[in-house]
Amino acid sequence: MKHNEQKGFILPVTLLLCLFVSLSLIHLLGLYVTEKKFYVEQGEIFVLESLMQMATADLIHQIGFGDINSTGEFYYEKGVAAYWILGDSHDTLNIQLKVMTEKGRQRFVTLLVDKEQLRVKEWIEITKE
Image 1 (tube, helix red, strand yellow):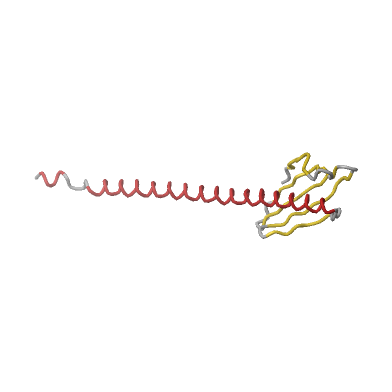
Image 2 (tube, rainbow, N blue to C red; image 1 turned 120 degrees about the vertical axis):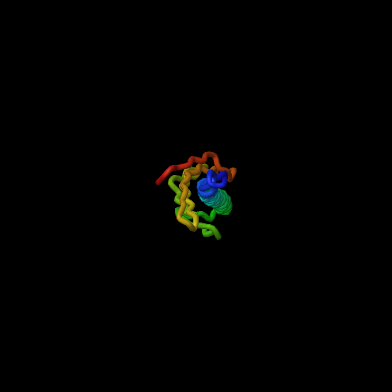
């Protein structure tokens, strides 16, 4: 008779265990997807920063040689940088620089460059959507 009192105990326990494992798996998959998106985003930000630094260095290099046009572009492995000279005084250049990654992410910055010392005097980040 004792055997009949435990009848039906295993099925609910098994279902609860399966539910717990399924919910844990769904939670872990959600964390994985979130972390993957985060690392992709961080990679894009790193590429933008690298493009910005390379373009600034190339601009200053061209200014040093006196070989700078009012507009121009630099092509890199991971993206493109374009610049426009907004103003030119006797010792300072006002330059707007735009970098764009292969995935279309872009960033703008305005630079005030000292022509004599060949260095950036002011760096102004511009937010555009």
